[in-house]
Image (cartoon, rainbow, N blue to C red):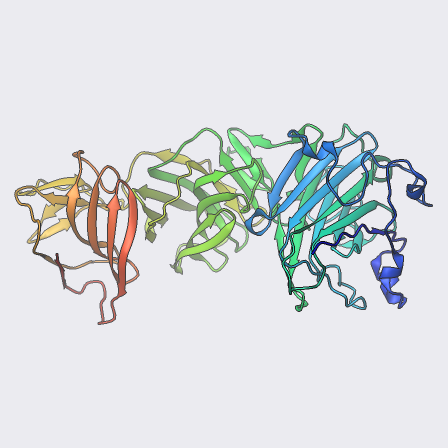
Length: 538
């Protein structure tokens, strides 16, 4: 069942004034067929005709122009946002895929538009930024029923705005009925240049947001295209030619802002800032940078990154993030197409405090990631679904975080005490190193040696082993490789390992791709420095 609503809401004193008078807001909705320049549009207080027909249906040919600004965000990128720069004003178009279109009917609630499905458009008309909304910053929140909150900045907070804009909503589905499946709803919003003090040649800052509400709930989940639309410093610069990306040296600023200091370091000048190197492709090896932060926040190195757009925070991107979090823990996170996953969290970093420079280091060997702070290994993780992106960068959760330029190398040495090892009779060392000290002792991280004078098709394979610290170690078998030097790439084998989570795991490694076949938690008092026998029967 489809039902279309084309609403126009005229707010002279803001939505709160209408609700507080005890008047049903629907009394202020109309379904006029407004076309450009006709008498229906020349209502008092708004004499600027729109460039497009504002009916909530994005069917004009201008919306189909492949060069028009178009971005996607929200869960599963369900929200499409477009901007058309007309001769008379800026027109914003939203299309939201939504299986259950919902709007709050609690009109006595001052935030009933917020507690609905809604779309949000923010604009900094002077593109002058700020840590809070200024008088040239505007916020427009519109829900599927056609009600809106229109606000203007006041230096720190938003306040009601008494101007008039033209917008319309169209629904492909039924409102507030979870018994059927809806398809989408859409919005067109027209901002006359003369009302907002900019023109077709201007550069403005913009941000988008949306909320997704379940009909019977009063709460809703928020999603944003940029990290925080309450902070104009994080807005994206745009003009009629498209998004205006900023660069410092060979870094592209993908979110927020950074500045270059006289000493050659970089400092975030707004919260939720991210920048990536534009020319370095990184697959294996080491990434290093120093960091100094004035506050407890989430800051560190991103790597394995790929993104569809030039501007992103998490939505529309995939990457790993090694950082010290606001609780002073070493942390490895993973963003997959905008979805955040916590991979591993270490204990408190003893050397970390605010206003102190520390060293961050990421080492990638095959599908294994090591995270070090001041040369101490805090993170060791092998990812069976390793990200294939090759971009790297810096991410700051707070303003004032200073980083040194990123440095990369092909070195896979993790521990600064790594030794080259020695020749072991009957074995070929293909990665790292070993020495014979009454037993075979690994002298480096990511060490692997294979038996050179024996093969085994079926039977039992066992070792006695002890780990001197939390690590990953074990047996490999069924190995095939055409290389004399390898760890996980350029080889295929099975590995029976004890990992850093005190788990016994059986994995299949195929040319760098690790597939877990079985995992079992060790519950019999396993710990480091305790000898064990590891045995495989096949």
